[in-house]
Image (tube, rainbow, N blue to C red; front, side, top):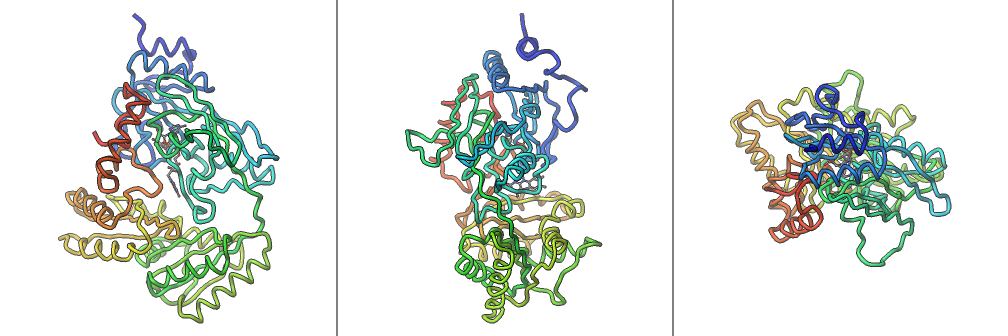
Length: 460
Ligand SMILES: Cc1cc2nc3c(=O)[nH]c(=O)nc-3n(C[C@H](O)[C@H](O)[C@H](O)COP(=O)(O)OP(=O)(O)OC[C@H]3O[C@@H](n4cnc5c(N)ncnc54)[C@H](O)[C@@H]3O)c2cc1C
């Protein structure tokens, strides 16, 4: 009798079905580094037809699979579970087309984000999705997780950039909906089934992405603020004064900012004084001198009004990079924060201050000190918390406290990284029973045998 591996070898060729030591170590775990597991096999499709063939066979054999893009996900979703076959899209790469009339790019799902960004830039466009993992994360992974990143305040999340896509369902059916039009209300918008659903409803194989004209000017400033209320006022003032040009508004609480500087030999604060909060603001436009003058005028007005206590306008590309390096230093300080609980939560701006105050009060009751470094894209209602304590026995309680407090404030347990396996059991804090049941119904309808990214997103 044929087994699943033989069937896959017959469909794909033996060299694309790897087992044992031939499977690279990196396919055992995503960037969460939690619960690594060697898959039963690794298959490497190069075309949509290959993906369809794999899923047809896996449905026939009731074989569970996990989809892998660049494995930079932070929710455990791409990490194999025992007995699963990993489907890596690392060979399904390439930009198929840049369409100047439609201002779109058609790209295969395994293409790294940085490659797609560069192809857009080479053609005179901007693909406005950007995140620290740009060199490794893939367009398919970005779609599956509805990735956010640094420019969401202006261009929205991945969902806003996808005009059309092609996906393969669990039974091997190919749904090709490579729409390039901005408006298309002919029935259900089926692409939304695959955006942000973390590979649980289908495997994305190709996508049509929206492009914007390149923005030649970028002006960056770092501001010191006395508190959170001032940060909200600054955000709204800048939005009013600068309109849509504000492309980043990143907040770093003193806990995060000074921890980074204390653990870095190369990064320095541009300020002599310490502030309660720091805001990294950036505008992108078409006139460098004009944009710079306008941001400067806005910051002078904010200083005059007492909204900010100090500000440093980046004078060079190097200084811009230094400001961003402080914001992006979380990866560098992670080794000093073990065991680390990394939270990526969303809260309405009006609830953020009370949320953080509740956490401070709760954490102060722990017998061992709890470190909580706070930063995030507050213009997108997104906070990142890096929490650690010496006592491993407290970790589960800390998770319950953070997610319970998020739920009590009407927030979301995942702003941009997704649910995967690591947040699956906390979904109830952000979604009602009716919402979770509707998600289950969709899952049952599209994957009745539960072979595709099973046990991800939805609690058992
Ligand atoms: C340094 C660093 C910075 C980061 N910054 C950000 C940030 O600012 N914003 C942000 O949103 N995220 C960020 N992330 C998280 C991560 O990069 C994103 O979630 C990214 O979109 C994942 O892409 P990937 O190709 O690596 O997906 P993977 O990790 O391979 O997979 C993620 C999930 O998507 C599924 N999947 C992958 N490809 C497909 C496909 N083609 N079809 C269907 N399902 C698929 C997987 O099964 C898994 O469930 C960061 C990660 C790192 C390491």
